[in-house]
Length: 146
Image (cartoon, rainbow, N blue to C red; front, side, top):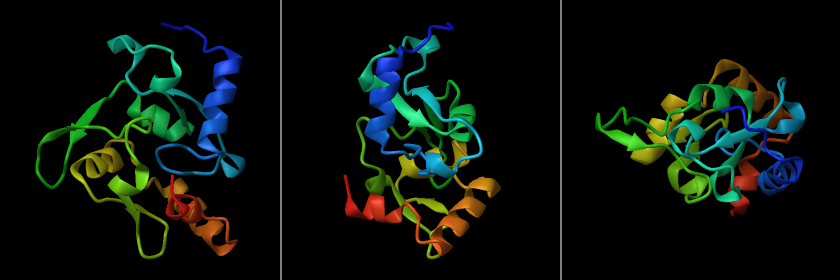
């Protein structure tokens, strides 16, 4: 299971993400830990190392997601598939809080993903607050739209 992702694929995945974690939108340039390739469908569940199954992820999101593909929606209590950055659009499932420091799930998928990946970890919220004060917050990237 320790298959190494080829550097050529790593570069493509990183460039496609434009320097942000594809889950929490933490900016890689200011992250305290390295970013990594995340298998959306985990290898242990048969996920392949192909571009359609790979996301660029901060260490925190990758660690909390690990092999998860589903989580409980706090509003409905149902088990829901986690957000898939290859098949879904971030702004359809998530909003920013009024002060742009927290990610708010606006769909069952969004709510389940916020909770499972802990998208509002205190360090990430603090980083967003700092980036916002420096006019470097990623909301412009998302609002500008994919």
